[in-house]
Length: 197
Image 1 (tube, rainbow, N blue to C red):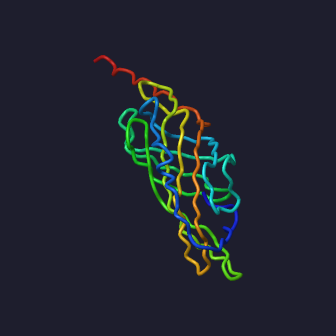
Image 2: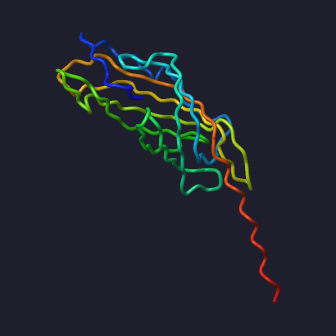
Image 3: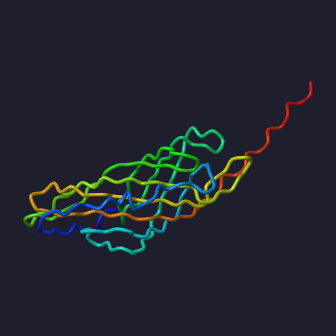
């Protein structure tokens, strides 16, 4: 997650960065495969925030995620497209690949503005991250399962400063839970049999 404003500058030697991935178990689905499509109202709780302006551990944020899937075979979709609200007014798109029944993961990078020598650098810090998502509950229509609740984790293990001002150790992480706010697609109408000759 990006800070809500320019990240703070911290002077001093860089300390070793703890492994956030080791502290967060992989996300897996308790219910299995389902089509993860529609808009989801997400509640995020920040689980790690070091030198990230505007964030603190335990903070709860509301976000909106829009998910779509193509080339699904019944309830199994090989990939999802996530359009997520990262912060107010900033959105990004991420591809999530299926890692197991009802489970997906994807990685990308965003940039954080930093102030250095009285100038704001829009791409001052590079923040690689991974999102893992799992189906938490589903409903079935005509033998196709649709996700109604999802859980997810976000991990940014380290931010890389691209300015001449030392940022110092910086990273964040969060857990997400969310419910679908769009209805399940309506069942397809049965095709009438052809008229008798």
